[in-house]
Length: 114
Image 1 (tube, rainbow, N blue to C red):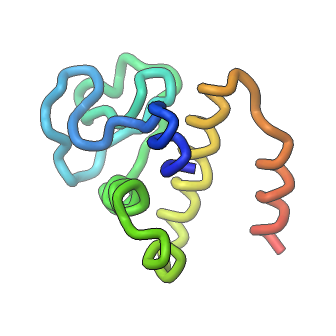
Image 2 (cartoon, one colour):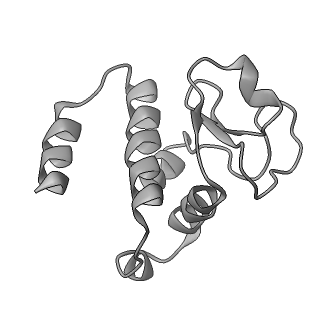
């Protein structure tokens, strides 16, 4: 999903806060906002209703997914927190840009539960 968003010009900002443009610290308090277009620092996140908390590990994983080689990506393993956060923020970003939530997301979510 993140590769598709990036290739189509809708990739989220992952290097600096989308509001204040300061480099993102790799510490707790980060948030992802589809409406803002990426990750917010702990200070700026307060002004965005659609901001979802993400861990520093999820930010690093998003960066790896966006820039990594596809063959390597399929071999990566993530903990449950990172999987859960990725499963929330990426579909929200896609839905934001499409203007609707594809039904395929529900189907894929059911597959992941089994």
